[in-house]
Image (spheres, rainbow, N blue to C red):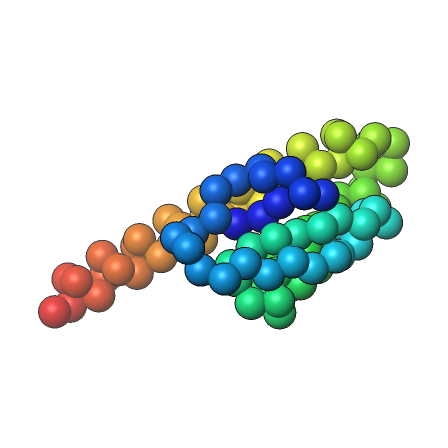
Length: 97
């Protein structure tokens, strides 16, 4: 979905039109390129920035790399919990049908 300052860091979906925006995360400017809407990409950047700020408030001694890794770990943890909840809901719906 995204590029970081012009370098691909992951593969974009299909051949949809790519959009390019500049965002600030942890007081640094990043260029993001993706096929999602501008609003979606801005929201993703805001959520990452918010999560980094939340973690930094508890661990002010962290350098940028440590902060980024802890943000990624916390985000994946949240994602896996939501994915498990989703799968549980799908199972419940299928059982009801």
